[in-house]
Length: 455
Ligand SMILES: Cc1cc2nc3c(=O)[nH]c(=O)nc-3n(C[C@H](O)[C@H](O)[C@H](O)COP(=O)(O)OP(=O)(O)OC[C@H]3O[C@@H](n4cnc5c(N)ncnc54)[C@H](O)[C@@H]3O)c2cc1C
Image (cartoon, rainbow, N blue to C red; front, side):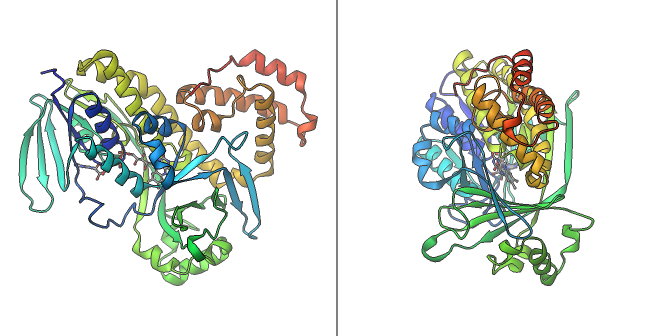
């Protein structure tokens, strides 16, 4: 069957599933989603509830294509830069971009998920909750589903299945049983904990509103992102074991003493710190690379199911939404020739998703450690000066990834070249005025070609 009345089955109504389903119904397909959790619009879910995400150019582009971005303005807060909090509670602000047009947007993951599910359902997507995918036969297209309330299992015949079921994907688990499926999973030896800073009077923010707050402490860090209700969603990233680790924080007084010593200005703003800490689970983080992403022209992995990354570049969902942009463009080009669309999708995306996976790990060291280093801050200033003089040649790595839709692999490769150039230019100076511009000119023109920056 390849008519537009064909029904596509998606597994997972997280962030990517509903957005992709929306794109499919707009193209005349039927789309139904099976989701293992209860409907978060009716049942309060705890884990992941208070996580905020940073949306940037790639995510915004996909939401704009879906006609959803303008509606989302009321649930996002622009963040212009990083506000670093030292151990002595001093503040240093470092802008993300060259001017105020280059911002990232804080959004509650739960609010975004709800907005996407509402929009998908309004366009005719059906979402069945508490239906866990248990496996799939790629030969017949038969899916095995379990009702999480009753425990009943049922089989479902489906022509095409897209696994949007996140980093622990059941569809990927099924592909793993096949010959020549390669999988690498790297668990970070750090965990994260969701915490909250309550709103001030009149739902105001008690921290600067338009910034992503970071308490960088070398081997670990706390971050906080503003919410529209005046609260700030915080995440503590700590090693699981060793000194200054989750293993050391076993009682309420351990937690309070640790925060008072390491994050004193944040501790003052968290009256329910110890309660929050022990109610919320400690999350783990994983990088997953696998291949192939598709089987028998019947099943495809997309989003975190295909390429989970650690959260330190704020790109997980931006990358997943860019998957949707790429997949739908290929579907428009080739029509429902699924085997071809799936293969071309993986060919186009994998090199880029592997690159952002590596960039995300690299950025962890930058966020928790280097942002507090004067040499790093000086290099940032030099980067901005070079970008101002060579706007199409020298675009900082952070900007290539965050404010443009330059392929991630290109951003990684050019970023490495630029890092080398920066090291040469910053050697022996500590003022931008002392930059050797003739050397900069030679290095930049010699090693970099102009970028196409339209996004
Ligand atoms: C702490 C943290 C901070 C982050 N910060 C950012 C950020 O700032 N910016 C950013 O872009 N990204 C960020 N991310 C990453 C982002 O959350 C993920 O990339 C994104 O949620 C992936 O979307 P997805 O739809 O592929 O998977 P998910 O959102 O995980 O959705 C998968 C869905 O599938 C369902 N499911 C799973 N298994 C089954 C099954 N067997 N049957 C049926 N349903 C199933 C799940 O219940 C879930 O609803 C962060 C992640 C974490 C953990």
